[in-house]
Image (cartoon, rainbow, N blue to C red; front, side, top):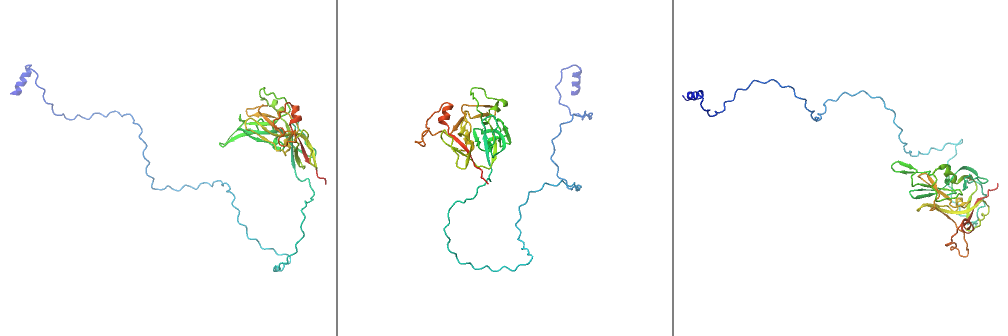
Length: 357
């Protein structure tokens, strides 16, 4: 009856009723069609290595023989072998007899004489002699000496402020080739540098006007004429040098002959503490010419010049023999004539006379 009344009311256009409760779920629909394939995804991370295989593969074929290896270092010497038996002579000798008894003690002999042995001398030794011309010309060897080589007069090197002086009487002061800086600087990292700006070389110079105000020379053709030439000689006569401490050249000792007379050269200094001296027994301490400046300086940057702060040192004369040890203190010599007459000492290079057969 109620259902009927509600239906009549709806048919008649009555008011909307209250919303009913949700109905029961319907049956599942039929399966839809498969969708299209999606885009490939990114590669996954590398997996962990698998466990090692269980079975060992078959042994491969034998390889070719390798090249011979390098010889190993020499082994140590083995121990000395046992001495061999003494061989038999043509006729076999008899057995050695027993040692005899000691003889009686002899009488004391006379006292010996302490006298030099008068053994004859000989020209057995070989001596080298280096001559520096202090000019652009090569000097000649004296009589009884032969020439070994000629070159350029090197005085000393300087690297990083440290100097290495060459004895002008030794062969190392006469280089056969001229280079502005004939040495290079090497470090522990197996790198060497030639011509570092701070490196220097110093050479005996020829007698030339030194203008300290001009620009340093950079052309090798301009530099070489300022470098003194030298020659290394070889002979059998002994060489020695004497210094007089006067304006007169000293005489050679007995059995010696003078080779040349000169001026007593002591040492040189450059800027700072660099420099060095000559062995006064060497012929390099007796230069045949006196002129200032005595040497020229070459730099690693490729220039050579005369510098006012480069100094020479010479042995001085003894003007007052009544005060030994005090002479010359505070004296100043100005001008070349005064220096030669009163200042610089003289010397003589002597050679021992050849022994007559």
